[in-house]
Length: 377
Image (cartoon, rainbow, N blue to C red; front, side, top):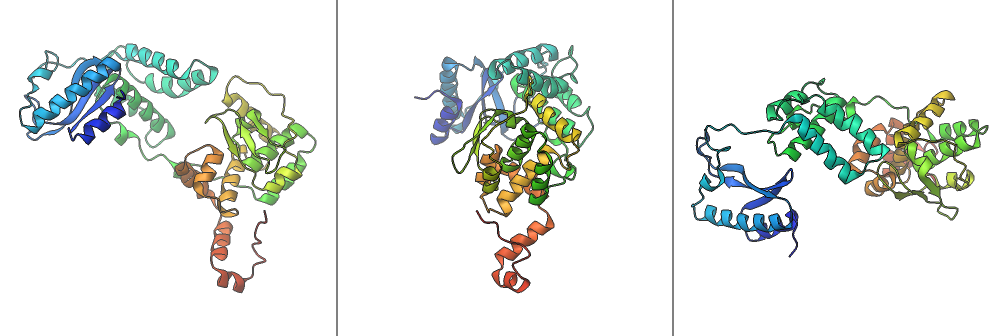
């Protein structure tokens, strides 16, 4: 019998028990629609937690599953009693104890590095994302729901910083078993807060590539990013196959390894991108490598940014090659939702017109097909 929370909950669901097992921090708890606690202002049953005070280990999982069946049976026959689950800390009139913020953050930090490893990259992520959010908590105070809300709302609303802080503080609350929903405070920062991008055309890309002929290594970087839509740091961790269709294998990076395909295929052939001559760059983190690329683009006054090439690749795949979003997202190393929301929103009006004309043969013929020639593979 499989001992995981998902497997246990699947068995409970199949048996129509009506109780779920959840992990909060390092302990297990039950969740179900329960009668109001003694002293509660509520009068109708609602979703609540039952603290089991047992650890999330194999023995604890077996005990939690058995307890869930007991609670489910008591609820089914109307005999559930809160008495067994209320102690001196949770009884009416008693004040619930919350963990100290500083101590909790240290435990969370230890768990973070035990799961992700202690590397320059994880250190950077901790410092920029987690530590910057947690420093807004009062280290000497208790990590209550009110303290978490205060920390989340201490940043400017509708910004990336607010959104990131809310996500990290919510993760801390889940780890500590503190009941709080920070989602309402996240704000509406998102895709339409992004700056306008200058998405280069194929012709602009080809012209710019020729202008970099004085430095073959950086010309190769530009060509690989344009042809395969790589992130700026991924060019230092990739290999292009000399065998058609000249796929590019990303060995490591922000989202791990993957395989992607050339768009346009003739670029990979004409530019001989498998003849790798990478710039002599070093760095401790992916961000370091990405900054090297950005600095080169800026130093040589290239008319667009490295990520503009990535956006152009995404749009090229969708519009010119009609590649399904799921496939394009996999080639680019992100979720289909990201592809839809982040990349395809930069499709220019001319490209929208190309789609319209190709979808309407009679109109296409009447207007004239020479305006938007079809790309040949």
